[in-house]
Image (cartoon, rainbow, N blue to C red):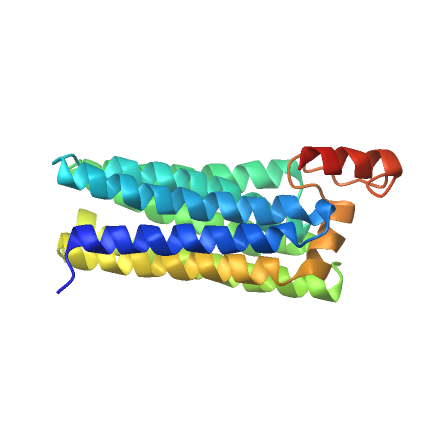
Length: 246
Protein backbone atom coordinates (compact mmCIF):
# COMPACT_ATOMS: atom_id res chain seq x y z
CA UNK A 1 0.00 0.00 0.00
CA UNK A 2 1.28 3.46 -0.84
CA UNK A 3 2.41 5.42 2.20
CA UNK A 4 1.82 9.08 3.09
CA UNK A 5 5.27 10.19 1.92
CA UNK A 6 4.92 8.43 -1.41
CA UNK A 7 1.44 9.91 -1.83
CA UNK A 8 2.78 13.41 -1.29
CA UNK A 9 5.74 12.82 -3.58
CA UNK A 10 3.65 11.44 -6.43
CA UNK A 11 1.07 14.21 -6.05
CA UNK A 12 3.81 16.83 -6.12
CA UNK A 13 5.27 15.35 -9.30
CA UNK A 14 1.88 15.19 -11.01
CA UNK A 15 1.04 18.81 -10.23
CA UNK A 16 4.47 20.12 -11.20
CA UNK A 17 4.18 18.26 -14.51
CA UNK A 18 0.68 19.67 -14.99
CA UNK A 19 1.99 23.18 -14.29
CA UNK A 20 4.61 22.75 -17.00
CA UNK A 21 1.93 21.63 -19.46
CA UNK A 22 -0.23 24.60 -18.48
CA UNK A 23 2.74 26.92 -18.99
CA UNK A 24 3.41 25.49 -22.44
CA UNK A 25 -0.25 25.92 -23.35
CA UNK A 26 -0.28 29.46 -21.95
CA UNK A 27 2.62 30.45 -24.20
CA UNK A 28 0.52 29.45 -27.21
CA UNK A 29 -2.20 31.97 -26.28
CA UNK A 30 -2.26 35.53 -27.52
CA UNK A 31 -0.22 37.82 -25.22
CA UNK A 32 -3.33 39.60 -23.95
CA UNK A 33 -4.76 36.27 -22.70
CA UNK A 34 -1.63 34.90 -21.07
CA UNK A 35 -2.09 36.40 -17.58
CA UNK A 36 -5.07 34.08 -17.05
CA UNK A 37 -2.95 31.07 -17.97
CA UNK A 38 -0.11 32.24 -15.76
CA UNK A 39 -2.53 32.46 -12.82
CA UNK A 40 -3.40 28.79 -13.37
CA UNK A 41 0.30 27.91 -13.53
CA UNK A 42 0.97 29.74 -10.25
CA UNK A 43 -1.88 27.95 -8.48
CA UNK A 44 -0.81 24.53 -9.73
CA UNK A 45 2.90 24.93 -9.06
CA UNK A 46 2.09 26.32 -5.60
CA UNK A 47 0.25 23.16 -4.60
CA UNK A 48 2.92 20.97 -6.20
CA UNK A 49 5.58 22.75 -4.13
CA UNK A 50 3.33 22.53 -1.08
CA UNK A 51 3.14 18.74 -1.32
CA UNK A 52 6.92 18.54 -1.65
CA UNK A 53 7.41 20.75 1.41
CA UNK A 54 4.87 18.68 3.32
CA UNK A 55 6.78 15.50 2.49
CA UNK A 56 10.04 17.04 3.74
CA UNK A 57 8.32 18.34 6.88
CA UNK A 58 6.74 14.96 7.55
CA UNK A 59 10.12 13.23 7.31
CA UNK A 60 11.47 15.79 9.78
CA UNK A 61 8.62 15.24 12.22
CA UNK A 62 7.19 18.72 11.64
CA UNK A 63 3.47 19.38 11.34
CA UNK A 64 2.22 19.89 7.80
CA UNK A 65 -1.13 21.66 8.29
CA UNK A 66 0.34 25.17 8.25
CA UNK A 67 2.30 24.42 5.07
CA UNK A 68 -0.81 23.10 3.33
CA UNK A 69 -2.85 26.17 4.21
CA UNK A 70 -0.16 28.51 2.90
CA UNK A 71 -0.41 26.59 -0.37
CA UNK A 72 -4.19 26.94 -0.30
CA UNK A 73 -3.87 30.69 0.21
CA UNK A 74 -1.67 31.07 -2.87
CA UNK A 75 -3.91 28.75 -4.89
CA UNK A 76 -7.15 30.60 -4.17
CA UNK A 77 -5.51 34.02 -4.50
CA UNK A 78 -4.49 33.00 -8.03
CA UNK A 79 -7.67 31.22 -9.17
CA UNK A 80 -10.45 33.42 -7.82
CA UNK A 81 -9.45 36.61 -9.70
CA UNK A 82 -9.59 34.59 -12.93
CA UNK A 83 -13.18 33.55 -12.22
CA UNK A 84 -14.18 37.08 -11.27
CA UNK A 85 -12.50 38.55 -14.35
CA UNK A 86 -14.31 36.10 -16.63
CA UNK A 87 -17.59 37.05 -14.92
CA UNK A 88 -16.88 40.76 -15.34
CA UNK A 89 -16.99 41.35 -11.57
CA UNK A 90 -15.43 44.56 -10.28
CA UNK A 91 -12.44 44.95 -7.98
CA UNK A 92 -14.56 45.20 -4.82
CA UNK A 93 -16.38 41.91 -5.44
CA UNK A 94 -13.14 40.18 -6.38
CA UNK A 95 -11.32 41.26 -3.23
CA UNK A 96 -14.34 40.42 -1.09
CA UNK A 97 -14.57 36.90 -2.51
CA UNK A 98 -10.84 36.29 -2.03
CA UNK A 99 -11.06 37.58 1.55
CA UNK A 100 -14.03 35.35 2.40
CA UNK A 101 -12.50 32.22 0.88
CA UNK A 102 -9.02 32.71 2.34
CA UNK A 103 -10.48 33.73 5.69
CA UNK A 104 -12.51 30.53 5.77
CA UNK A 105 -9.32 28.55 5.27
CA UNK A 106 -7.60 29.95 8.32
CA UNK A 107 -10.73 29.72 10.46
CA UNK A 108 -10.85 26.02 9.53
CA UNK A 109 -7.23 25.54 10.57
CA UNK A 110 -7.80 27.41 13.81
CA UNK A 111 -10.83 25.27 14.66
CA UNK A 112 -8.61 22.17 14.74
CA UNK A 113 -6.71 23.55 17.73
CA UNK A 114 -9.76 24.60 19.72
CA UNK A 115 -12.05 22.63 22.00
CA UNK A 116 -15.57 22.85 23.32
CA UNK A 117 -17.64 25.93 22.59
CA UNK A 118 -14.80 27.73 20.83
CA UNK A 119 -14.34 24.85 18.41
CA UNK A 120 -18.07 24.83 17.71
CA UNK A 121 -18.10 28.59 17.08
CA UNK A 122 -15.13 28.29 14.72
CA UNK A 123 -16.80 25.40 12.88
CA UNK A 124 -19.99 27.42 12.47
CA UNK A 125 -17.85 30.30 11.24
CA UNK A 126 -16.43 28.00 8.58
CA UNK A 127 -19.91 27.20 7.31
CA UNK A 128 -20.88 30.86 7.52
CA UNK A 129 -17.90 31.84 5.37
CA UNK A 130 -18.73 29.06 2.92
CA UNK A 131 -22.28 30.40 2.69
CA UNK A 132 -20.93 33.90 2.17
CA UNK A 133 -18.69 32.72 -0.65
CA UNK A 134 -21.56 30.88 -2.31
CA UNK A 135 -23.77 33.95 -2.00
CA UNK A 136 -21.17 36.14 -3.68
CA UNK A 137 -20.59 33.61 -6.44
CA UNK A 138 -24.25 32.91 -7.21
CA UNK A 139 -25.48 36.41 -6.32
CA UNK A 140 -23.67 39.59 -7.38
CA UNK A 141 -20.90 37.87 -9.36
CA UNK A 142 -23.39 35.79 -11.37
CA UNK A 143 -25.50 38.89 -11.95
CA UNK A 144 -22.45 40.64 -13.36
CA UNK A 145 -22.10 37.76 -15.84
CA UNK A 146 -25.65 37.94 -17.24
CA UNK A 147 -24.75 40.02 -20.28
CA UNK A 148 -21.59 38.14 -21.24
CA UNK A 149 -21.01 36.68 -24.72
CA UNK A 150 -21.86 32.99 -25.04
CA UNK A 151 -18.28 31.64 -24.85
CA UNK A 152 -17.42 33.71 -21.81
CA UNK A 153 -20.69 32.93 -20.03
CA UNK A 154 -20.17 29.20 -20.60
CA UNK A 155 -16.64 29.34 -19.17
CA UNK A 156 -17.84 31.22 -16.10
CA UNK A 157 -20.62 28.71 -15.49
CA UNK A 158 -18.20 25.78 -15.68
CA UNK A 159 -15.69 27.44 -13.36
CA UNK A 160 -18.42 28.44 -10.92
CA UNK A 161 -19.64 24.90 -10.38
CA UNK A 162 -16.10 23.54 -10.25
CA UNK A 163 -15.33 26.00 -7.45
CA UNK A 164 -18.41 24.87 -5.54
CA UNK A 165 -17.26 21.26 -5.86
CA UNK A 166 -13.81 22.19 -4.59
CA UNK A 167 -15.06 24.31 -1.70
CA UNK A 168 -17.56 21.76 -0.44
CA UNK A 169 -15.15 18.87 -0.85
CA UNK A 170 -12.38 20.59 1.09
CA UNK A 171 -14.70 21.86 3.83
CA UNK A 172 -16.27 18.43 4.41
CA UNK A 173 -12.90 16.68 4.35
CA UNK A 174 -11.44 19.23 6.74
CA UNK A 175 -14.27 18.63 9.19
CA UNK A 176 -14.04 14.85 8.94
CA UNK A 177 -10.28 14.64 9.42
CA UNK A 178 -9.73 17.69 11.59
CA UNK A 179 -12.56 18.88 13.79
CA UNK A 180 -14.52 15.62 13.99
CA UNK A 181 -11.59 13.17 13.60
CA UNK A 182 -13.79 10.72 11.68
CA UNK A 183 -11.07 9.87 9.16
CA UNK A 184 -7.43 8.98 9.81
CA UNK A 185 -4.63 11.16 8.45
CA UNK A 186 -3.89 9.03 5.38
CA UNK A 187 -7.52 8.71 4.26
CA UNK A 188 -8.16 12.39 4.86
CA UNK A 189 -5.04 13.35 2.95
CA UNK A 190 -5.92 11.06 0.05
CA UNK A 191 -9.40 12.56 -0.29
CA UNK A 192 -8.08 16.12 -0.05
CA UNK A 193 -5.44 15.52 -2.73
CA UNK A 194 -8.07 13.95 -4.98
CA UNK A 195 -10.34 16.99 -4.62
CA UNK A 196 -7.45 19.39 -5.17
CA UNK A 197 -6.30 17.53 -8.28
CA UNK A 198 -9.80 17.65 -9.79
CA UNK A 199 -10.02 21.35 -8.99
CA UNK A 200 -6.64 22.35 -10.40
CA UNK A 201 -6.55 20.10 -13.45
CA UNK A 202 -10.18 20.83 -14.29
CA UNK A 203 -9.72 24.57 -13.82
CA UNK A 204 -6.59 24.66 -15.94
CA UNK A 205 -8.12 22.57 -18.69
CA UNK A 206 -11.26 24.69 -18.87
CA UNK A 207 -9.46 28.03 -18.86
CA UNK A 208 -6.70 27.18 -21.31
CA UNK A 209 -9.07 25.58 -23.82
CA UNK A 210 -11.26 28.69 -23.87
CA UNK A 211 -9.07 31.06 -25.86
CA UNK A 212 -12.03 32.97 -27.31
CA UNK A 213 -13.51 33.58 -23.86
CA UNK A 214 -10.12 34.71 -22.54
CA UNK A 215 -9.71 37.20 -25.38
CA UNK A 216 -13.20 38.56 -24.72
CA UNK A 217 -12.35 38.86 -21.02
CA UNK A 218 -9.02 40.58 -21.67
CA UNK A 219 -10.69 43.14 -23.94
CA UNK A 220 -13.06 44.30 -21.20
CA UNK A 221 -11.84 43.18 -17.76
CA UNK A 222 -8.19 43.13 -16.73
CA UNK A 223 -6.97 40.32 -14.47
CA UNK A 224 -4.52 42.37 -12.44
CA UNK A 225 -6.06 45.83 -12.56
CA UNK A 226 -9.68 44.66 -12.45
CA UNK A 227 -10.60 47.62 -14.61
CA UNK A 228 -14.02 47.47 -16.18
CA UNK A 229 -13.07 49.78 -19.01
CA UNK A 230 -10.05 48.74 -21.03
CA UNK A 231 -11.05 50.17 -24.35
CA UNK A 232 -7.45 50.95 -25.26
CA UNK A 233 -6.30 47.36 -24.76
CA UNK A 234 -5.85 46.83 -28.48
CA UNK A 235 -3.88 50.00 -29.16
CA UNK A 236 -0.27 49.62 -30.29
CA UNK A 237 1.00 51.12 -27.04
CA UNK A 238 -1.03 48.70 -24.95
CA UNK A 239 0.04 45.71 -27.05
CA UNK A 240 3.67 46.72 -26.73
CA UNK A 241 3.29 46.88 -22.97
CA UNK A 242 1.84 43.38 -22.81
CA UNK A 243 4.60 41.97 -24.98
CA UNK A 244 7.27 43.44 -22.72
CA UNK A 245 5.49 42.05 -19.65
CA UNK A 246 6.15 38.53 -20.89
